[in-house]
Length: 148
Image 1 (tube, rainbow, N blue to C red):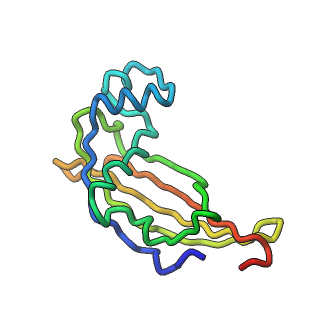
Image 2 (cartoon, rainbow, N blue to C red):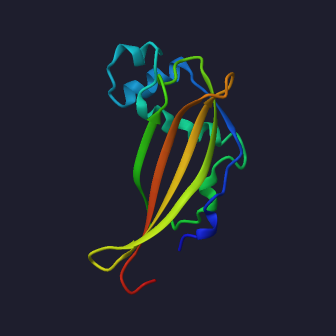
């Protein structure tokens, strides 16, 4: 079961360098054909999901580690991106900070218990500190009726 004590856990800040080549590779891999992506003028909206490459370089930055969700029962349920202005572009450096925002439960129609965990990652411009974007990840752990 997910530990409700994980709510409020904040990871260490991590730097995310927005690289021209990586934007192009991501755009090609996701079949995004807009020239602005391939030229690095802006990132595709889902590009921020690559932040795990940067979190891996900063120990303690991934707040999700505090969740203790079962790999057998857990799954990625939803991902949302909110931009507070133009999307990042090649050459930008962002400071990311993630936090566990919420843990909720519900019972499905089949009687299964579902535990939802929401993690919010804020991305701020390294130079100005301005909030550029947020990524909201929702994971869910499913416990079949009668098991939990």
